[in-house]
Length: 434
Image 1 (cartoon, rainbow, N blue to C red):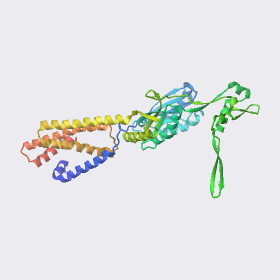
Image 2: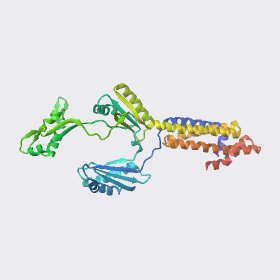
Image 3: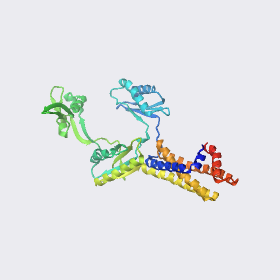
Image 4: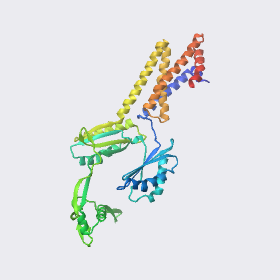
């Protein structure tokens, strides 16, 4: 039985089906994710290796070429390109479209593990990064306060960032700018020479002294108590009073070998907001998280943090969700205006309120039904999918006009309403489906 014949002969059943589809579509719409673009997986990955103090030529021969030749054997690799800079090697691998990047990254790691033994021991372990749009921050804040930048960065890093990272959908809260406390030990070369001490000896002793280690356990009653020795430095005096063995067999205080200062590390990034030095806080979402919902959760938490910290001033520097909402609202507004104008023009030309109501009813029902299909197909609401819906409204109106015109032709030939609807819709049904 044709759909048109079934709809005409089973009107109540058809109405119930339509209402069911509308109900499921409304429920599905409330659960659809909202983002700027569809979920896109770029078939590529970057392999970054750091090797401090090494020139580009040595970096290419010692690191880049071995890794390049190894990853070229991974299945699905389309092209491999590399860049060797001072202290860093970057290799970009491009895969064929459709490649599962999770498995591709695992294959890359396995190939790198096979050649790890021939890489320089001083080089850092190669890091693999997938090209993921989710790595782009969805929110960037600038935080200023009355404390100095070092204390402000510590407060944000220890208390504020962890609170945001615990929110659903948040993958990482990273910091930029600020000052990082650093203990600077400047050794005098002539004193090291006079005492017969080399730099590696001082470095090794500092590393051994600044640790907390386990000292075993003791049993007291029915309980086992762990013992640990605390050796972490608490003050500059602890560092100054370290005994360094000399070449003659005696010891000398570290303070006698140079200058020890409590200072700050060299700044590699500077963050400013409204002309004031600040701490930049970037929020990255999880890959499958809803951008708008995640951003709203973060902004709500930021308001609570602002109320708790009176001395902090948190300013939003970038909000991707705001741009997404404006872009999607624009597409929605254009689709609604387009549908309204289409119905208005139809009424002007058809001059039949009943025919116009049929088309005007079909437009929202079809769109709501599409939301149901989008939910089960795991398609989010974005400017691409909404643009497709806007185009679909025009196609829907065209098809409705074709059906109504054919039914009207049968009516003009003296055929009854039911028969005209059955014959008129059935005759063009295949063409519309095509």
